[in-house]
Length: 211
Ligand code: Z5A
Image 1 (cartoon, helix red, strand yellow):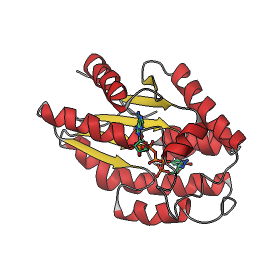
Image 2 (image 1 turned 120 degrees about the horizontal axis):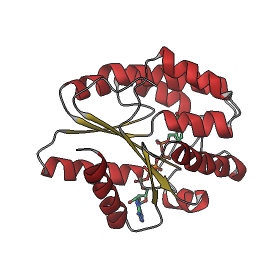
Image 3 (image 1 turned 90 degrees about the vertical axis):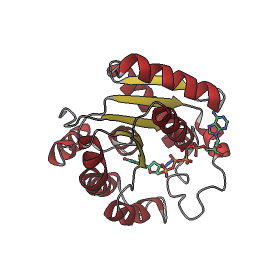
Image 4 (image 1 turned 30 degrees about the vertical axis):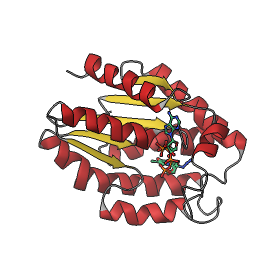
């Protein structure tokens, strides 16, 4: 994967729905700002005007609206737009970017759970020149507990929530497998802890791994 072209740092947050990614993103950004850093919090799909328009196509409607390849192509188009308009400019000016979901989500949802060939995602990542994150937090949490936490928070944006339990179990297993394959990049956090404990663990890892 391409190294991150930047002077800032690129941190991604991954995990199932309701695992606490947005909560951790806000907490990490506050901690970085308190230390005098510029922190940019963003998310996928979305994070730039074109990507936000694509987000609506992906998270709304019937679960079977798109197959895994169609989804991967839409996520890749949104990701390229997000990289061009938000992530790369922020990294280039030295900001620390905290991104709620990135290409590991495509690996978990479209490849592992959706059946897309791994090589198809590898090719898309090369085509869009997706930089590797400097650090990725995998928030591990039981899917049913995550769904309960986020209940009612995604009115009209519940397309992935409609997938069955086996799908969400495959997603969880793949996030853990990614972390096992890439221990130098990934840190797994038990997301059943309190939000304060999750933030403390993440803040320690940032201090230890990203100077
Ligand atoms: N998707 C994909 O398939 N392929 C891709 O490449 C990408 C995405 C990029 C987008 O959903 C969907 O797109 C996603 C995968 C797919 N679908 N699913 N499932 P999204 O990112 O917009 O939604 P989400 O990930 O499901 O976000 P979420 O529900 O907002 O979850 P979260 O950000 O991880 O959780 P949160 O908002 O921080 O917390 C949820 C609630 O729990 C909230 O009330 C918090 O106050 C509370 N909370 C948070 N942490 C804690 C702790 N530690 N204890 C107790 N309560 C907590």
